[in-house]
Image (tube, rainbow, N blue to C red; front, side, top):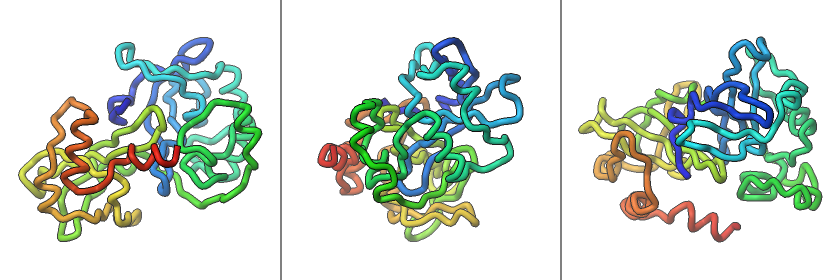
Length: 252
């Protein structure tokens, strides 16, 4: 199911033995545009450190209860490698973190989750995968930090990033929500990371390989509504691009 990152912010995090806090933001990689960690807001618990939860531990999202089920105990989380709250996430930390939980490295394979296009919790299949194969370089970005980035079309400015739409099955970021009100007749539109030409992290700008006119005429995303598959088909049809679900079916 698709959710906006801002909708998930504040959802309670329900561990195997009680609530551990609430969702604050997400870290995603800049290659596959996939969520790598949920950053937890723990209040007074585990003060002075970032509490990161990999999608390997996120079992389900309940929009009615505004809750995310976490398949870990408080003791497991407390014993995980310590990351100071003012430090970035390093590869050294990640290797220690993934080793602690005995999860396969997501950066150690050709697909978005290493050898798999989806998060798999099948321990037997993990043993068949050799860690480190096809390792790739990446940087982790924060949804909170990228929120507000300016968006440039191929022929000029078009808006700014207002939110992200996340798929809780694969934890891929499916779309950037772009608000065009300062550039075009005000509306919100969706842009797939697949259509991003490059990002200037130093200038806080997203450059996309679409024209302003194409974006202006794209199907509008109505406030408080998430895209349905019919909407997605219309969107991809408008841009004459194949849907991401077609590509993933081929890889699966």
